[in-house]
Each structure stands twice: as C-alpha cells, then as structure tokens.
Length: 326
Image: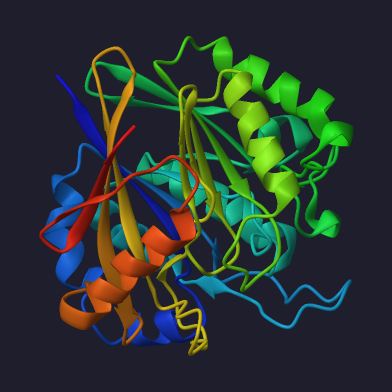
C-alpha cells in the first residue's frame, strides 16, 4: 500500500514562539494544519532549535541568534503533530552549548521521535536513523556545511558537519554506507546547506545533490535558506533544494516572503519508489503555521513554478496545492 510522508523546512520553536506557546494550547503552533499533519503516514521535520532550559548562550564565537524551546511543551507539541523524525544537523543545536544539545537528544529519544545529525560524539552524530512507515523502512542521513565550530568531535558533542563537495565525500560515503546496511526501502539525505535568504540553488549544490542520487539516495531534503527553492525530478530520485520555513518568528523579507512555503508530501510505493509530490501551500502567522489560501496560495504556486522551471518537475494544480509525478 502506498504511503504518504510529509517533509517540512525549519521548525523553530524558540524565542517568540516559545513565549507564545506558554500562554496557549500545546498544539496551537500547528494552526489549522494539526489534523492534516496527523493524517499523514509519517511526518519529517528540520528541528531548528534545541529543546532545553539549561545551558548558557554560545559565546565562543559570535552568534546573533540563539534558539531554544522549553521541552515541557515542545516535545508534546511534536508528538501531537505526529512527528516521526527530526534532523538536527543545523546551526542552532549548540546555541545553548553542549548540555542543551544532549537534553534535545534525550527528549526526542524519550518521546520515541527518531533523529539524526547530532550526537554526543562524531560517530553518533553521523549515525543514520530509521523509521518504519507501514511496511517501508526509511533511512535518514543528516549533514550540514554550516557552523564548523558546532561539529561533533571524536569525544565531544556536536552536529554532523561535512564539506558538501569532493573534499567531504569520503566521510559522506561512510555515512551512506552505514545507512545502506539497514537495507532501507527509501534513503533520504537531509542537508542544511548554504546561506540564508537565497532563492536559487548554487551550482555546487546542484552537483552535490545529483551526486547523492547517483550514490543511491532517493530523496534530498534541503533546508537552511529560509526560502523555498527548486524541486528537481530526475530518473534516480528527487531533490527538494530547500523546504523553506514552517514554524518560526523570523523577520519577513517582503520579496522572498520567508513566511510562505509548503508542506512537501511525498507518496512512496510499496517498493520504495517515489510516485508523487504534493505541495500544500502554508503561511506562518502569529508564530504558528496555517494553510495558505487565495492570493497567498496563488503566490506560492506561481513562485514554485517559476523557481522550478528547467528542473524536470511539471506541476498541475489540485485545489490550492501543486502536484507533480516523480
């Protein structure tokens, strides 16, 4: 039986989101999408903050932003939405130093939410995660090319960091090999790559994403830019270059509209074959995600069509959503 799995960009539950959530219901952060999220066969997110009330702000190098959420509400909120896996390989897991990173690992483990991309040492940070979705086994490898000072070491906590190019391929090959040992039906590489507020993929990201597909990755789940980017459909698999923002309190750029994106729903066949991608337009308002409709949904659809031109994905409209075969 085919399975439909949802992918999101940044789920940042800290700062103003955290403040608002202390005064409202635990699932308010999911707006009017809660039941839709719960109806998916699985939900996969980029968790762009640590879950802890411990630790001090990272001051070993300059950092303008520090994101953390109180795990007393944040973990139940993730559970309520049905989050099955979170990638942690990003540039905010150490915002409140190692103790908060370890709290995040323990909180997700305690909730039964799979995670990859961070750990108590380099081996754990680079370890793949697996999630059972019906009869399918989905394996995840998570990496970032951001924030080298956050990289896990042989005996120190941190994130899974690698140069996403020829110089980092030995490490990446080893990580992919560990994932293949689990004999997954679907192999996902989740990448926190590149700078903020850029709407087009860099040439080196195109080359690297396509190389991953050639190495047996079925789907590349990209994030970091705070703006959704191109979807690329290829015979070997698909690349979601950036899934944009899903929940946050970020300042909105009037041109890039980083408060608008999609829930990326991928339908996977019984054999692990990618069949269809459905893009459900969403908008962030009052530190919560909501279904986008009307002119906002139209902007999302037309912008995705423009950004994906020439990348092999042909979209058809279905209600407020876009659909493409993979």
